Image (cartoon, rainbow, N blue to C red):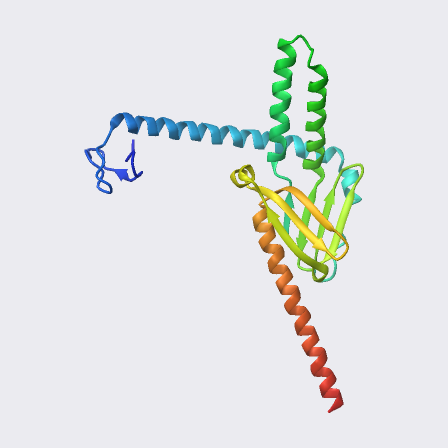
Length: 234
């Protein structure tokens, strides 16, 4: 079993009495604690991965059952258009409702169903979040951005890249840990907000790069038009 320094985390030789990096004396009890801590972290990560896999399986089954509805929202690709990134809602949007459902169910049982209305509200919150998780999309192509929210009552946004004024991204501590955030897309007419976007920082960077590319193409087109006009006049 590998040993590590309790002070600086440097890997140690099996028979080391002191850390060669910081000089701290090797403490076997600390090494055991580090090992236990590592095991606990691995167990937590494994549990989170199993939870996410379970959510994905349920989501896929749910989407398949409503495939006919989703077919009506397919995007007709334009000429030379290709998808750069397809971002969906992160499973993290379901964690808080799941915890609240569990807590309200527990307290409902020990209070002999006094809190049953709160349990129903928690289930409703979980259902609404699950609908959002299974039906929200944000797609970036080399020509436009397409966004969709809702399953039965659907709101769609579609904007050419050259019509987007700006894009912003923000996330909190939980979002940074789990890898999601909120993407704001600002057009001339309105502001679109997409919450719990998976890999939101990467999507933000891709959108920003696409905006720069669209601006370069716009300037290049204007320069070519001016050059053609000058050539005709000459």
